[in-house]
Amino acid sequence: MRALTYHGAHDVRVDTVPDPEIVNPRDAILEITSTAICGSDLHLYDGVIPGLMGGDILGHEFMGRVVETGPGSTLKKGQRVVVPFTISCGQCFHCLKQQFSACDNSNPAEKQDLTEPLFGHALSGLFGFSHLAGGYPGGQAEYVRVPYSDVGPIVIPEGMEDDEVLFLSDILPTGWMAAENAEIEPGDTVAVWGAGPVGLFAVQSARIMGAERVIAIDHHPRRLELARQMGAEVIDYSRTHVLEALREMTGGIGPDAVIDAVGMESHGFAPDSILDSAKQTVGLGADAPHALRMAIMACRKGGRVSMPGVYGGFADKFPLGALMQKGLQLRTGQTHVQKYTHDLLRRIQEGQIDTTFLISHRLSLEDAPTGYRNFKDKQDEWTKVVLKPGM
Ligand code: NAD
Ligand code: ZN
Image 1 (cartoon, rainbow, N blue to C red):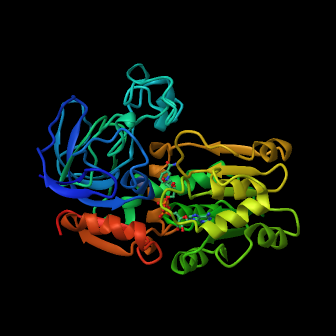
Image 2: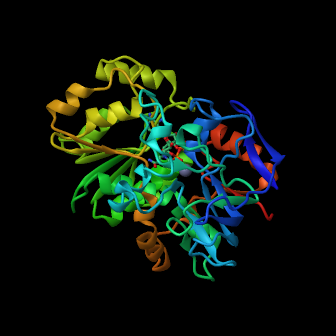
């Protein structure tokens, strides 16, 4: 089959590789119909996450048709399914607590280095990610093997388009969990750093959960315009002093909750001047994550900090003092996708949530390297890339 493979930083290629096969009884094989490129893929693309090997197949946001099942799978050939990016057994201590992204069996702790600082031996298996997350082949391919296919995949009713449901695999539940972690109360003001796919779904989710005001912060005009269409007020951080603006907009108090939907600034999208101004404002070094630091400094006393943005390793100059002195709650994590898919599918069917507004480009699998390059370098215009292997 054809698949998008990793060969080093900024070097991804579409290669011919062996077809996947059923390995365990609970496996299923899918023929991929749609698969998206995620902000998390850019961390891999940038080469900042170790544990990838040359030839690894990327991709963790995908859906397709079931073409083969093991004897322990509950899926049937021909069914259309969306697959969570987190691989979960459904039976371990953490899965039974619905903490699916902490599954003990899909990436067993005994196989991991307990002193490894990047992921802290914490993760479940993830499709198309580092070998620190189990090294499972991803779904930016013609076919994929889905382990524990009786737990994760959600069957999609005929009549719904791929584009309506594809993002149940990751970014929609991620935006939703980000808003849930912000513990929104009716009437709250919520500020969201990053108007990328995750930030935009966090905006939409926060509104549904009753936030009276949502303020989105980014510097891409088109992305900010999408946030506005989702009901947010917006701040362009390249033109405005974010902390002062937020203070003014909230009567001097600060937002009740803040969401960091940026994560590691490995994409080089924060201009140095902005980092410098943040340094002056906050009085800290440049090596602390910039959006997160601003979010903590902006949040009102006793407020909540939600961090869906992905980080690895250590971050120094983290404003721990402000976090403690202001009495903030910090919640974060890889999304427990399986916990949210059924509820979110229903909300899409009822027309409460729209996902298709996000897609700017649909490409063939062969054009995936172009998709990666532009999703990274032309972020304003390329808001979300969906690959269609059958195209
Ligand atoms: P993206 O790269 O498309 O979007 C990030 C946005 O942040 C961009 O629009 C960028 O302009 C903006 N930005 C950068 N620096 C900023 C700053 N200082 N202030 C305000 N905005 C800033 O990525 P995405 O797909 O939306 O993903 C966002 C983050 O969420 C990534 O770190 C990704 O890895 C993470 N993620 C986490 C999970 C999870 O399970 N927790 C799942 C999916 C993605
Ligand atoms: Zn993703």
